[in-house]
Length: 403
Ligand SMILES: Cc1cc2nc3c(=O)[nH]c(=O)nc-3n(C[C@H](O)[C@H](O)[C@H](O)COP(=O)(O)OP(=O)(O)OC[C@H]3O[C@@H](n4cnc5c(N)ncnc54)[C@H](O)[C@@H]3O)c2cc1C
Image (cartoon, rainbow, N blue to C red; front, side, top):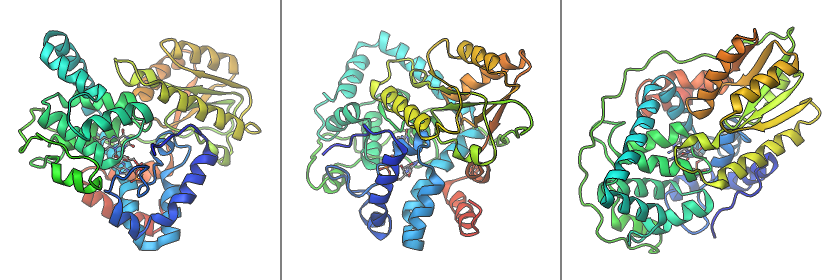
């Protein structure tokens, strides 16, 4: 059984959460690395968390309510998402550097036919490596891969096939429904030993065979890692903060693919004159992005519009593609608002579009306010060092009820 995420709705996300919660305690800690068909031991909530049809805070609360401290392994995994986001937020240069690496590696493919041949075989699942080829095909067919398969795929891509890690990260971003600039880029860097110096991930055939219940028997995997060249990690800069909106000003709401649940803004009293939606799946890569991602996001927008129809007046969009910023400037002008509130978009394609929009709106005397969720504001600034320290702080904040 392969996962399908055809129902990109909050109701579906909540149903999946409810179904998974009984397994989020010690069973998750014990079995989460097994990648059995249908992936019964993991939640498969990531596409919903990525678009925030469901939030991390909700998932953590549900797991802790059901299992208390026995949910700690699961909660820690959910916290990795905030850790990666915070880490990149205070080192945004790493994202720009990765994008430049993708462009340079794509240019290399034009010059190096052997490399291009290996790359094509890897992306289409025709390398002859058992497991790896199945995962490539599963990923392109479903938009999902189990975490251990992602780790092994990235390791084989880099150390066995000698392909640039940036092209692998780009391949994932083009196909994963949960494709996320922070989690994806930084996980690939982790496999390559660029996150924790001296720690690289080497996929081992026997482990793959064991964890897949004997389904895969890969042969010829690299027996050792090699150093991957990269500039040193930049020192952390300040963590961005969210903006404050003025309740007394005519306001419009701009929702985007990084956060499609504006309930928290509506509960805080926001009454938008108009609401627009921005999607940017095509901006995830210079290469074509899987249509599954755009389909999922468009359905998520439809769900959000239907669910909150009573509170969201005059819906506009989804706006996407090269003319998106122009279209949003025209919408903002027509809405009569002097302030546009938008959920804070973490480093990635949407944040880049919002930066351009901000400049254009300023020329129209319209303010763009990036409102940050309390969960992000509480956790991101702590991603200054390794995950261990971050986890300790996050755990404390959760126990105090501050997250
Ligand atoms: C090379 C590589 C690339 C990855 N790319 C992405 C990506 O683009 N987007 C993404 O969301 N995750 C990414 N991950 C992390 C992880 O593999 C997925 O979050 C997880 O497999 C999603 O499946 P699930 O919802 O069933 O996870 P579960 O095990 O059920 O975990 C619950 C939730 O916790 C979060 N989570 C779990 N593990 C991690 C992790 N290691 N890092 C960050 N968050 C985690 C996810 O939001 C996930 O939905 C990547 C991992 C690797 C090794």
